[in-house]
Image (cartoon, rainbow, N blue to C red; front, side, top):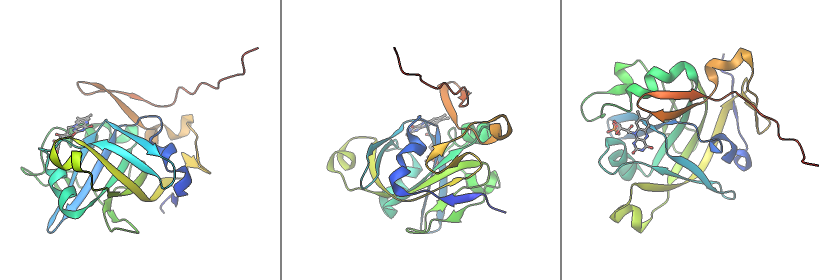
Length: 192
Ligand SMILES: Cc1cc2nc3c(=O)[nH]c(=O)nc-3n(C[C@H](O)[C@H](O)[C@H](O)COP(=O)(O)O)c2cc1C
């Protein structure tokens, strides 16, 4: 049974707000692909827009430019090895989804491949045409057209990190294959 539930678009920014390393999914023609990305962030609330760095030399970038769409999936800590692995080899050389047995579902709006198993959430994104991106930059801008999350860790627009959902807690790349798992929650109190 899937624990994924739709996330209101007004809350989509909260999925990326704390800077998780993500899996960028893409498809065009006969090709489907996935890569790791540590650099992404929300940039606007309404409509929800994000920026994400997708190196122009990657296969992902080629598929995203051709299809105008991509998915941003949030791997839980249980997918740390997979996340690192798909960030080390290009989909031009190997079908990473097939090699690692990664199952996808189609996004509700654009039909992009999205990973739910082992992920805390996903955002389905439409690439925004941007001259600087097309000409030179690796930074891409996109509108979030749908989002969903596993209700065991994100519900009602809020994350809940508990001892019983550590495998779904997001991961954050420190470099060189080292990650820190989210979960050391600190509640800010009002200063006197
Ligand atoms: C943890 C991690 C984070 C990464 N973050 C980014 C990123 O933010 N942007 C980027 O363009 N590449 C990033 N990469 C590198 C890509 O994932 C890598 O180039 C990948 O092989 C591209 O795959 P593709 O050619 O199949 O699209 C990262 C790699 C790892 C392991």
